[in-house]
Length: 299
Image (cartoon, rainbow, N blue to C red):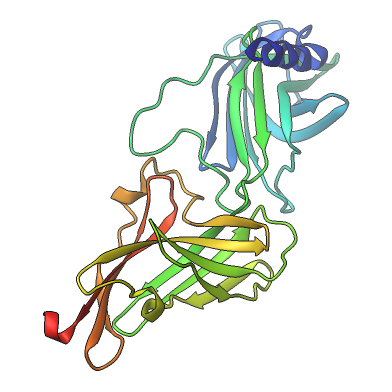
């Protein structure tokens, strides 16, 4: 299967750019999940450039992004910044592998150059090298083929529900969120599922333009004997047969547990019943709520 994927990738790259002259691309990176930055040096024969552009090529489709060119000695330095999205000044690309090239206008006409680059270096630290787009959830992953030709892999957003605001207090916990990568909805619900045995707790929601807000049903989550902590996984049911995770996913954190922390809070359920609750995010970004039920007699 890996061999088939390699052959398919090579075919996609060979057709549009493999026969072009090469420009040395020493910077080819997507920052903040949404902005591609490119720096390339054209061969010495490319002089007196009047205009430059960055090209995204997929089969017969070509998307053009403005670039700037500057003469450095006997070379031409080309820089480009492509912001991905659906706004007026943003670049919109469909799913799949896009070859990336540079075109320049000279006195003698237009010339195109393939970008010769290298695979991104190994990345180690608190952030991931290619985070999702913080608004759309799509992924724009830079890379290169077998011949070192730059390409961009575009992936659609995974269906999830992104927490926008998590407000905790001594009386209630409220969560605002929005749906990402979700199409149609049918009887949407928030579903809290206990780890281990137990019955799900469900809350109807009514998203408007994909956004919704709800109060965490702490009284219903305070189950089991006093002193026993129950952990609930949070989901959004988008139809009677499908659920997606609720959490924090559109960020560049390698492990959100170390940064996105929420303190434990205690609320009163009635005169002698209390619940200490602690919402938290797993390493994958999924939201969970730990609930510790106790009574006045057990304190």
